[in-house]
Length: 330
Length: 181
Image (cartoon, rainbow over all chains, first blue to last red; front, side, top):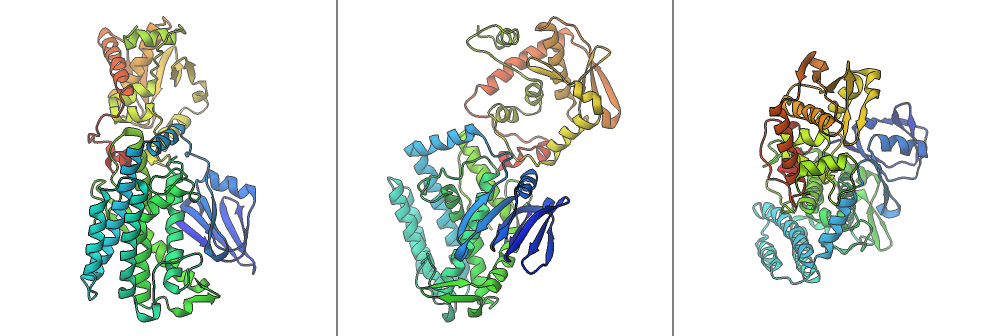
């Protein structure tokens, strides 16, 4: 898989010869090798033109835009290879069939809880005593099969996630107090890290989904159109514990991120530029990390696991072969 | 009319039939390479186009015969790479999958004969390896083509694809990850 490039400064990106040139507001020039780019993330105020868009389209490079307070503002996706009417039809059919939707949604919840649990057992086996949370998660998993509809399933997921977030309080130092998950806006550093990390997971899932011709707005656990790319929310939930949470614990506990990496505003707390740079550098390294895949018989990157998840879903929809959500196996 | 072979001939000859049936050269090739891949193709299950070996096949087709590949001859369901002294030439990047390529070419010869009433000889060419092989349509090949047409029909009309079976060339297939995840 290719790399993500993040641009924080204000400025302009354009096609220059056969590559991409970034010219920042203070006159600095940088080049982004287009052949190694998976996606470009724009965090600052950036000008670009249609010539650049065609160029990125030719190379299959996506652009994800983040606006004020790191809010995801949208994506410019390459047009190539992402239209398949049949895929969308099957996606809608599965949504419209209560049994199939429930089964897909249940699979997403099962995977999410499994991946939360893996984090909890990891820290439980170290000095932290988190046994109670493991039981709560196991109780939630046991209830998945009994749920009659999506809202009950959502309830099970929410209960599990609340229990899971209790471990954050125990694992993180006192200076990073965390009194439950809040967003819009995040009130403290831990929530700011979770929000920022999760928005990166989300955008990476958008890229993965769009590489497969699946329609990112047709989802199973989340209600379609609840937010723009609700399928991305379904898939991102599976990966948040692996990509965001573990990284967050590591960065804070190793003091790579400190209280100085945030800026406080009235009622909100956000990573400052230095904090975001530190987080993203480590986040991108995490995406590039590889793991031996049990059935592909080769190593795959964490980032490619997102793509594989979209493939699995697409395969299920088009062939009727079963879908089993991503569960961390290592 | 339920026999796929008669349906194919009727379709190709432009008869207005209720259940038209088409087989392209590529479908014939896939049938011999991997029935699962054939099913995927028939349902437009598209996968990662950046895959190296897919790109390679396209490149060899375009570059090896330069200008001449423009002469790609479209005849209803089939598209011939080129005609050379009246012989049908099928160009392949390598000889690793010779039998599927031979069957694709045999199908072209069968189609020319059966649908258009033209008898032709064929040549299978691997330009990168400077290898050529003559292929002609004898009774044995004719039977093989017709039973393959029936086999293709069974695959593409099935509700789900045949199960994945491991083959030596799975590694280089565009659908590899799709099959094995």
